Image (cartoon, rainbow, N blue to C red; front, side):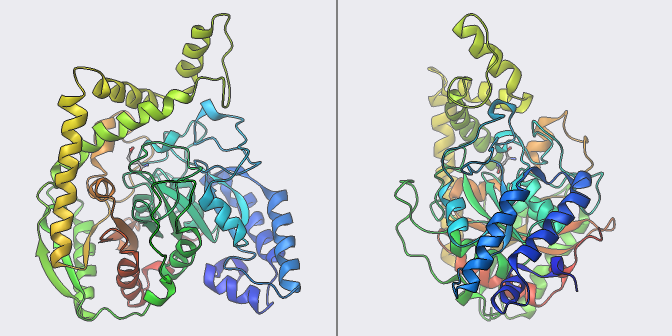
Amino acid sequence: MSLIDLTLNEALSALRTKQVSSVELTQAYLDRIQRLDSQINAYLTVTADRALADAKRADERRAHGEDAPLLGVPVGIKDILCTEGVQSTAGSRILEGFVPPYSATAVQRMFDAGAVLLGKTNTDEFAMGSSTENSGYCVTHNPWDTERIPGGTSGGSAAAIAAKLALGALGTDTGGSIRQPGAMCGVVGMKPSYGRVSRYGAIAYASSLDQIGPLARNVQDAATLLQVIAGHDPLDSTSMITPVPDYAKSLTGEIKGLRVGVPKEYFIDGMQPEVDQNVRAAIDLLKVLGAEIVEISLPYTDYGIPVYYIVAPSEASANLARYDGVRFGKREDREEMWDSYKATRGKRFGAEVKRRIMLGTYTLSAGYFDAYYLKAQKVRTLIKGDFDKAFAAVDVIACPVAPRTAWKIGEKVNDPLQMYLEDVFTIPTSLAGICGISVPCGFDSAKLPIGLQLLGPAFGEEIILRAAYAYEQATDWHSQLPDL
Ligand code: GLN
């Protein structure tokens, strides 16, 4: 078995018992990135020198008898998260050359835990998209079939895990951007509850929805990463003060008596039949493992996408107003100030970002605010109410992550509405602020991965980790990775 085949927790054991050094492990990853990433484009920036220096320091710390939760583990970080001293673009040309003077809290916690930074992973511009095709720099390819998208927007992080170009990664999920690429790349992706992980230093898209979370090869590795990044941060007033449980303890493999709700609105006409079949088979397996399966209804599901496409662009239009070419990134210089602003924003924002800014500016404008934004907020509360009612009767909800497997690059870029509709099963969770995890649950006939989504109530990460781990232990989908 070669070094890159170790999972994150296996690598940690090997590092702890000094069977391997962080420098060896990191070099193995850098060599693989060098060999393969031109086919995948998981990374926007590879920080090879820094990685080796981080690794050397980790080995020295170990030589002095120190340990830390990720000491010496090479990771990738989505380029929407600020990394001190390393360019952070959010996938946008408007932030080309932006080198943040600080790291996001979640990222800093990874570094404090001893993680080694391999580089920054690709994303749709400002995390707007579902395929990583909206990046201002390059398209990321799905490691299972390089003619296909990896999902998005954390497509770089998901592809990096699937192609073994990182041991663990961070992504962000505003409406599905960790869970959906996780599913499409056949890896584990987890969106923590809103407030579980600090958003400080995450370049803002839609602040009431954005959440940082882990992508990894298995549930245990995802739990290890979540443990490091979770918890209150005085720099983010929306991060919750509730204590962080010991997530490893929830990985018991035991789900006897667990009540699993299956929402009928999440199995719809037009879904790829193989997705339907595999997810239902996964639910059957949960039953065999001792869970009690209950049919439930989330009646406001259909309103998720329309509500999201008012709330998210509204917040985006406000958040993105700061990119004027003066304070961050690149400027298109013109004689007149307003011309400079116009040229900078006109040239350096991509089409999807402009579309969202226009939508959001419209829905927030006087005269339309009540009809659109306010109404959307009210319906958002109804969507949250659906989940509140459901979680009074069940412990977790099981459903598909996405209606189909990874599509061909280019297939939906000219039809934004089609792309938006792909998020039908992930968006309501984000609007409700609850947590969700995607675990591999099979393949379609083209050998493209399918994901099972497990949803839990707000701050119920332990319960979905428990259910996901039990499922994973009973299957071997997660141990299958593409041959590259
Ligand atoms: N596809 C959705 C959007 O474009 C969600 C993206 C995300 O979660 N960042 O907004």
